[in-house]
Image (cartoon, rainbow over all chains, first blue to last red):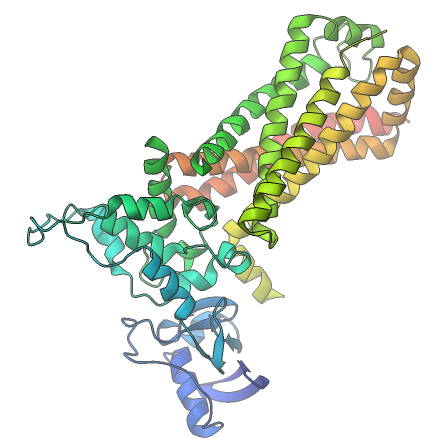
Length: 222
Length: 113
Length: 124
């Protein structure tokens, strides 16, 4: 057990809590400890606690991560700064509204739009494309994106990644609609400046910049 | 359209690297004197009154302006709140600046005494 | 401070690279303006040329020249790196490319800056 100083940016300002944490404890464990020992009104979200649902996404020492997957001892510091996810409106303490994320998500028509004929066909797995399916819509890429920070209209890596999956699905028929949205100069793929922030922080290790790069090359060719 | 601008930025960038290296060597070494700092007016004038070099230099300037002002446009669009309509104004302004700048550069070669 | 370095040097290093690219780009535009202005002024004849050379031989300008070399190298190499990525270079090499370009850039910079420095600034 070691003593940690957890600085949380709450709605009423930054509050500092001292807790003793074990070597294998995560930031989420720390939050539960703080809630139990110091501040029962501390607001934060979580669900699965094992890195599958994406609910506990928050900024830890300046980088957006999943709290349940972030071992405090791996942060190399006894002072841990926790803040709500960037680029999202804060509801209370560490709870943010994911509405902006899903607004962009809906714009690319995330559902499969079949052409009616072959919707039940089984598509052979493609190793490259399969890796892009792991998105848990946690919003971490959205929070890390430097373009998002200055340009609220950008679709964002997750939405573009999902659009990519749909475009490359032979059962889908809405390619043209999606490509048109992606081609938009203001909010489409061209706003991505290959910062790689999204790829670096994605908890599912999806190479989002690569997805966007592929789309850029596809759209250039056509 | 956005795709073309994006593509051109990369192409002009690569061209500029080559042109810059060539320009650097031509200006500093391929003249009467090899030592840096001993460039004479006569040597420079001899080169830039040659229409071939003039064409190369003007092309260099135009490519540099395209790359630089296109990049500037990106910066403005990213960090300001111009919106779609404002962006058209920004583009128009940058095109005007580019045209003036290019004209200025070309004029430098005209009427050399 | 360590947190800042860790944040912007680690996962966000690409964003720093983009910022550097933009700043160097704008600086180079300023340089281009001054350069065209100087060449334009040379129309006036040899006297104008001599005046310009006198100004540009001062130690301050020589140091600025060396700085210019650095700015050009930064912008060019980073730009080439971005172009390679856009053409489809493997992303695993992205960070490595950045480090390599920094290394190559430093070498080229020294190759240019040291002769410049010794031949000009120390001549006085």
